[in-house]
Length: 230
Image (cartoon, rainbow, N blue to C red; front, top):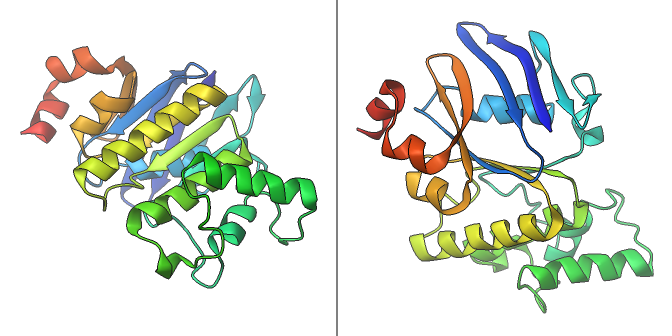
């Protein structure tokens, strides 16, 4: 269980409150108007955004004071967070050892992660030599390698075309099903939420609410969501 217990985040004029419980293994979309605080919510869970008050609890352990590196979390950002001077292999290997000093078994793990996301044979290529979809696969391979129980996606596939984005979302869903990972995904696309998320958190008017079952929420949205959907 991931629990946000009476969480408040205050930054200048921005205020966000959240009291959420997310069951382990659930796939959850995070939707709401631009600027409402969706990415801030994920940043707080990951440890990049400080809490003003409240606690974040995973598996009965308070992780609120842990550094991002120590939290049981992998994050996939919109820009994929790849280093342009490193090969696809080394970009993935960073998820295992930042020093890139891998033993034979660890090198095999990196290769297996690249195979899992369909990039066998692309190990030596730089990000500039890869398509947008292939870059997303490299970033996803790093998530696979880390094997963390919580996976946070902050619109990592928004720049991809509809068909490729659908393919990447299905790959994420398959990987989460295989590993039992809990997924939180920020998206502006309701189609993405329907495709991948069992449940949905609505962030609007300074509050993160839910999670709600996705289909009923989108079929009969509350006023804040209705305004967002137009």
